[in-house]
Amino acid sequence: MAYSISPNRIYQQPNNLMNTKPFCFHCFTHLLNLACLLHLKKQGNSMTQPTLFSFIFFLTNLLVSGKHIPTTLQGPFHPITIHFDPSLRRGSDDIPMDDPRLKKNVTSMFPEQIALALSTPTSMWVSWVTGDAQIGPNVTALDPTSVASEVWYGKESGKYSSKKRGNATVYSQLYPFEGLFNYTSAIIHHVRIDGLEPETKYYYRCGDSSLPAMSEEHVFETLPLPAQNSYPRRIAVIGDLGLTRNSSTSIDHLSKNDPSLILMVGDLTYANQYLTTGGKGVPCFSCAFPDAPIRETYQPRWDGWGRFMEPLVSRVPMMVIEGNHEIEPQAAGITFKSYLTRFAVPAKESGSNSNFYYSFDAGGVHFVMLGAYVDYNSTGENGAQYAWLKEDLRKVDRTVTPWLVAAWHPPWYNSYSSHYQEFECMRQEMEQLLYHYGVDIVFSGHVHAYERMNRVYNYTLDACGPIYITVGDGGNIEKVDVDHADEPGKCPSQGDNMPEIGGVCHLNFSSGPAKGNFCWDRQPEWSAYRESSFGHGILEVLNSTYALWSWHRNQDTYKEDSPGDQIYIVRQPDICSPSTSLKVISHFNIYSH
Image 1 (cartoon, rainbow, N blue to C red):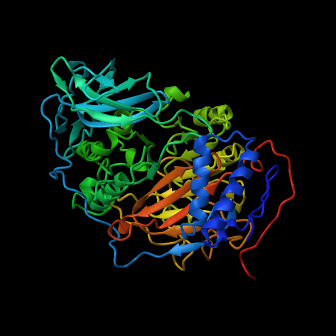
Image 2: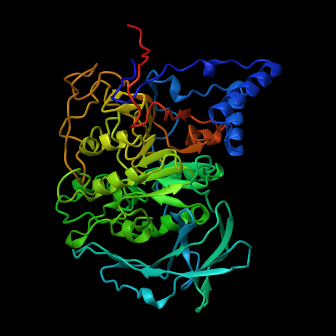
Image 3: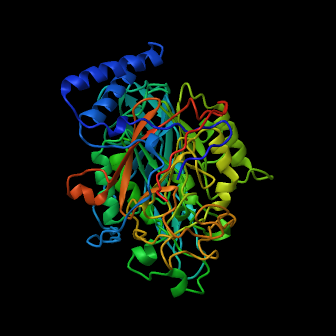
């Protein structure tokens, strides 16, 4: 197996630095000094202090810690499968609505479900909920103008030098059918506070000072400004979370890892599952109720989820993207009402006309959040998302934000039986554009397991392709996926795995070991590591070329708390730039024939 080369892109043979064993401190010191001098020379003697520190940290970890952490320069890797541990449970029960973490603990119009989201590098969205939601056959929407939306904030506890006002709204989830309950939300507030200084701690309260009904004081720390050597401390990535006992373990574990930013890659609450599997009802709604005119979603789970998440997301900004469990169809064909109303995202700030897709900067990382359940076609009258994406990527300045990270809910590369090739249409429409602009990492969820790919483009190993990572196992009620499409009898039919929204483009492979077949007969070479486990990931960007990715499994919180999978993702901008001319390629093979 070897990486392929596309026009203007090459692969270089990695050196053997990563295989170096720990040795005497005297030798290490000399090597460290030499390496720093060489790196300084390469940087034109302009290496900043943060870059030098992260470079020293990287070498120290490699040469002294004794723990071998591979880099993507050593890839492509032999495919590895960690099978499900039978001593663990594949799933866990939903947290009941009367759990203290889900119950409302404020009165009247006092704020609850407080959450943060990035707006621009110098501004932040603050969101919260006031009042009482209603559920039943007849509901009456609250008046969002009946309570103000204010945020007081400043750099000293108890001293708020700035105040901002925002907007409030409500939404309804309506089912005009006998036996189904309608819902109307409490009042949802969004306030954008601006003029913030980078890497600064801010104290804030939100609510309506005229009632008076202001929240307790909360605190957050702003991220660094976009710059080549300035990055968030830790970026947590999690998907398909839900509200189960495993969800609780995931969030507790994630909180202990102290992130400065959270990516939530879809399927947040599973409110549309609660009245069936989650609420101890039937496991299959359509089987038990074949004549039901519509599938009911239990909206109070959204309120419970907001309370459950508040201790974390009231101090750490969370950036969300929609998943299929957010579709929630209701009367008159309305969809995604809760997702679109509850979350503030930097759509307008990034030139998007839709909350289904947007982008933002976090230090030297540019994030692109894409919508898989709206039109993604590259042509036609409805190609707004593709046109926006093309313009957004064109404007990225890699000297300011070297790292380019994309995220959406359903993965393009997936070797599990579940959702296999489900979003092949989206891949065929958008993959070439992301590859052309040199996207470094792609995060997705949807499949309830963990999987990290070798660098890949168009199902071919490619040294300049993105690292695709699936983290769709935050703790949801639907259990961990354990079946692989390449195992005997586990290959789904081409009639399976149909997306709720979008076309079907299932294909047989035209080359390689799976030529002529829908599924491989072994773990695909583009799948580097897969494991059926609940958990979350942490991305630590060290400098403009190195980032440490760690997969934290829930079961490890009870043991030595060591990551289940860990790798340094290494950018190679000199050889993977769209403007780089074709050079000689060195292949290497890790399969013996």
